[in-house]
Length: 523
Image (tube, rainbow, N blue to C red; front, side, top):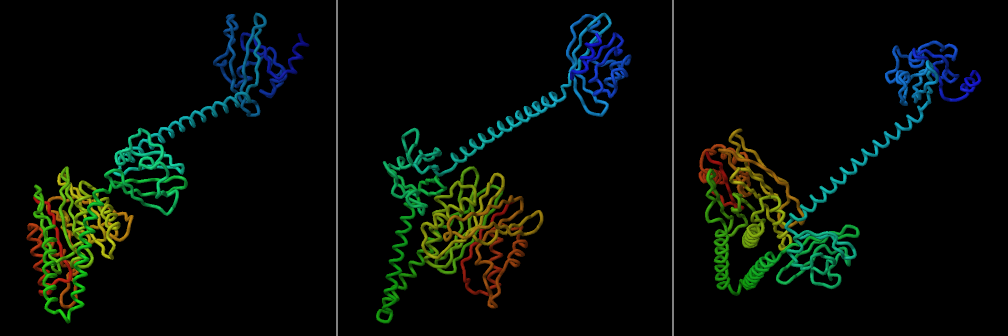
């Protein structure tokens, strides 16, 4: 028996023998690594106090089950050794004699640490998998969102690779091109070509715009080249081209008349009488242009419950470059604009008429003022080849909510009389004038008018009007009059301001066109 116990001293596991009172009857040599005591020092000691530092038997002790001849379970001990190291042992129990029980402790500390690491790694993998699934969902949401955006635009959009394959397109492409195939494969097929289009950006990278004609439609195609891909935006410009052709014809007729005038002037000394007749003809034409221009102004101002409107226009010459307009949209929206064409006379009047036609033809129901100005600027840049330009202040009002958004193309600021604060604020938004620079972005501002508030729109001819001392009428004088007559109707406000202006200029003729448009929220 002693030789068997001696052999147990050479195994790694801790082996202890206890009686039914938890007293140690035997412990092999490895027990010293746990307790720091020899086997002899442990004899007769309670196992739970000596080995595990407890005052009572272990919570999951199997001794009672052994005594009752039940099948014991494998348990674990999480303990601190006499040197302060944490050790985890698996414990296996067996019964030898009537009052003798064996517990074998196997050090599974490293295995436990490895299992903990594996479990931790497994949790990390699960967490990463959750994140990947979330990222996948977000990517899908972004894809759906992008698809909705593409299909909400008024232009047809296509993305094409360098093999002319259509990677993606929105529904507007098929609407504009009337392409019958369910799936678009090659981009040139939709334009009626069997091979690469003549004006293709893959042939010449400098190609940024092209025209296509499909049946009775004129399409304008803009190209943006990105590495091996081209983004095509397709717009129906049929009506636009027709309108511009008509305008160009009018410009040609006008140039012809100007040419005839030049010939008459060259013969001034020889044909004085004829020159006077020609001058009379010119005066008549200018008068007619002025009458036509006046006829382009609104016949009457809007009749909107709760609002009062007033307008005033006077050209510096028989025909001018100023104008104002009121565009009635759907759903209670109205567009109000005041514009100033550089220069005077017939050229300014013609450009004014062109600008008015574009505004009414292409910005109807465009409730974003900045988008409307961008559209007008693009069309003017494509079709006006002079050095003239247009400044404009455009305001879109929701008559149901009194909410307004506005944009400015290099125009004078809007004067906003705030009844609640009894002050006049200058409201503006950044943006270059129209008809000169392409791809201009226009800032958009917002304002809500309450009872007694006034929106005062005008051209620079008002504030820059001079007296004999070359002093300008200016903003301070204008604002003081606006506050002074803030309780009056819009037409009365305008009358009093113009009366004050004429007194200031002492009856001098105005050097520039003057236009005023006033909106007031009534009680």
